Image (tube, rainbow, N blue to C red; front, side, top):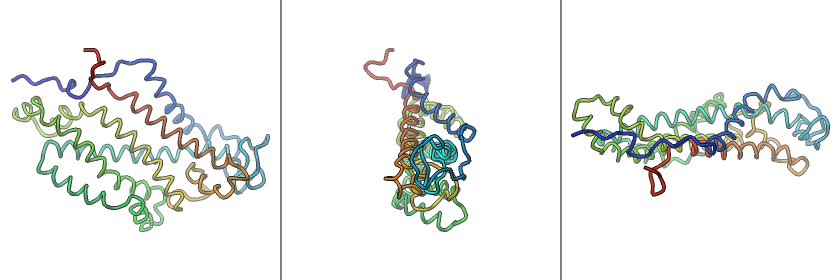
Length: 282
């Protein structure tokens, strides 16, 4: 029996088009801006330049925050920490879920234990889990929030990967490779993993966005990043009381977080391989 080509099971490579670049470009530009933002900031992030919640003028293009610091400078400097934390969460969750999910699909007995453990972990509310880990590790700061988000995100992600990998593990070419004596790591890395690209890219995008939201929620709960650090999530919490005096102090970081979430999801969808369907050419 001749094994089928793995790459044809769940989808084909999406031909590169200008539209793919257009949809991925906003995320790339935001990433570059976040990394170079501290170099572009016109003022020091901890230097008061205006009255508290001062309106925009020639000195502070977006006005001042609660301490009169330049909102634009803090906005340009506050993206990198948030993106780095969310990226670390997404990479850790997706990597762990990929390994456990594929292993669960190839070894059903192990998969049943993984599924039961995931069911138990899902019962813990995410916000409560973040508070428990962050409060148990008060000096952990951003690292504690990232660890909590990773631990709480893996059970959901494992179920997604395992469900997507199960039909692939039952295909003829995987069974043939297994019967031929191929090692488990080979089956995972060479036979199943290449067919999960679309699922994993979508999962990575969702985990990244969830990481952004979790860090933002933690900032509202006064967990994670602490003043005087420049962070988009922290800026929203700090300046919320003065939103009527200087709306840009809250609106600017809110827009940045929203654009980041949308652009990353668009990029992940654009880079995912096209699934075969009625309109997909053979």
